[in-house]
Length: 118
Image (tube, one colour):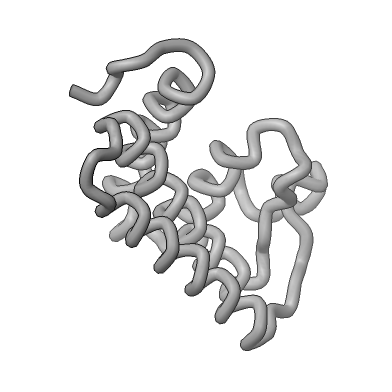
C-alpha cells in the first residue's frame, strides 16, 4: 500500500515530531536492548524484548518521516513495518521482510506457545 492510501485509510496521520519524543523512543530502545541482554532470560523473552526495540526503532523512523502509526489500531506492528519499508526505501526492504517474520514469531511467543526461539 502507498503512503497516500495509508493516510486515506487513517492507518497513519501526518505528524511533526519533537526532540522529547525522539529522546523517549531512544530510552525505550536502550531499555529493551539492555533488558534483552540480561543473563538468564528465556530465549523467547530475549527475542520478544529485542523485537520491541526494533519496533520502537522503526517507530522512530516513522515519526522522523512524519508518519507515525497509532498504537491503538489493530495490526499496528504490521503497519509499522510496512510504513517503515515505504519511508526507508528499497535499501531497507530486505530488513523489513525479516522484521515481518520476527513479528509473526513474536505473536506466537506472546500469545500461543513457549520455547519457540530455540
